[in-house]
Image: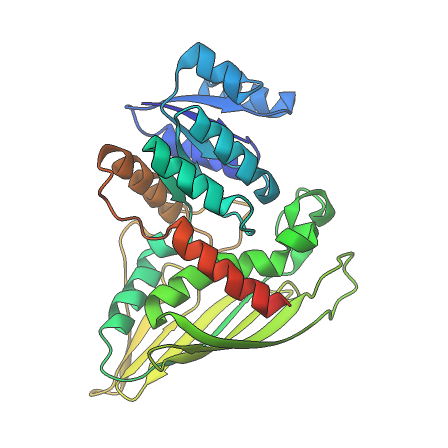
Length: 325
């Protein structure tokens, strides 16, 4: 299978590295920055092109992985589908072009796959499985935060999409984490939020949110999202009359409380903690690999049901819009 990776920044390089592990894939790249193309060629032997039309004419690829800034996704997705390519895209953060591209993908008979990395983590999958089987109503308290300048220490936060109010850092956290929250605890019935700007960061959006969520099945939670926290944090407590779990965001920190014996036990996983230097400790590589594998599997079997879809994301982005309003 021939795949083009569009956008060779930090996420594009990650996708190339993971896809290059497979011997059944031939990779090509597209990026406007010559230095990124040269790096991809030097590290992975990847040939780069300047446009989708150019690589389609020369190489006849089967699929595309879009790793550019979110606001560019809609137009690139459309062009890829028009060129009969299956599409994997990073999270979009905005619903630009959703209806048109969903219709076009169906018309062309192509896979339109949306990244939702936390649905492929073993820790969140375990919470989802156990929460869905719980015999009681559940509450959760979930805090995700990291100081904005620490997200990409190698570049200014004003130089990429998290500096833009439409694709801001808090919105990205919500778009990353709310899919698995919804999958674990149910469709959202009501949300309310208290938000403000607490820092002197050079941004024109709220940098912290305290969100209360009511789910249709009676579960409810508090979601704290911010780009203020100086020590990066990802911590959730889930509890009910017969249920209690806790997770600190890392592969070795998921615990479950044994109510009968009044002891806390750690849930361990194999191959769940691969890590790349420069990212927070709770960012592991395996889920990124697994969702790419899920995309490739869906190309082979169009009947495969993805963990997250554009349809689900379209509805969730409306809720995020409501939280931000």
